[in-house]
Every structure is written in C-alpha cells, then in structure tokens.
Image 1 (cartoon, rainbow, N blue to C red):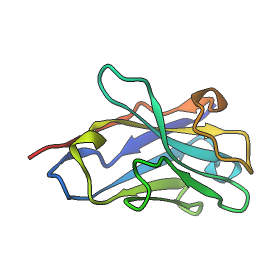
Image 2 (image 1 turned 60 degrees about the vertical axis):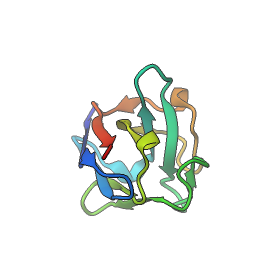
Image 3 (image 1 turned 120 degrees about the horizontal axis):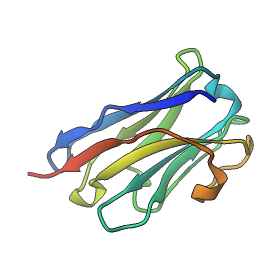
Length: 125
C-alpha cells in the first residue's frame, strides 16, 4: 500500500492562513475519497473536510464552513486544505486519509483506511 504525506502546517497568528497538502506516493489518489481530520490534545480525532473521487462532492464540519476549502489536483496526486481566518481552536494535528467510498463523503474515521503521519497546526498570538 502506498503512503500519504501531509505538509504545510506551522505556527500562525489568529486570522492567518495556511494551506495543507496531502501527497500520495506509490498509488493514485484520484481513485479515492480523501478526508482531512484533526486531533487536538486530549480530544478525539474529528472530521474536518472531505472530497469524493466521483463528482468531487465536498463536505465540511460546521466549525470550519466558510473558512476552509478542500480541493484536489489529480495531476499532482495531491489534495489540499486551504485554511483561512484561523482560530486558536483550530490548533491540532491534521491528518489526511483515503476512503474507498468513491461517491460519499464521511466524517467517520472507520471509513478510512490509509492515514498519513499528520502535520501540526498551531494558531496562537
């Protein structure tokens, strides 16, 4: 099975922006629905956004709607998460993962089978 690698995390002030990347190696991303999740210290991993393989359906957690945008570039074998108007409560490790449900977005971690190692996002002044 191939590998997912997240990048683009870092330290940003409230109101700032970051763009996370999820790059695949060893397999083709466009076959899969991709989800972005995050996990803050002491909290459960939660779904942030997802984009399907078929029809490019997207979905977002209520907490990030209007601020985050998910997209995919199949030519680059990469999925992105553009995060704007960041808040301290967005601080977490962000993970991407693949799902074989090609036409359905899901925020359930059990629907995803291949996970990256994560990238830290810290929003603080």
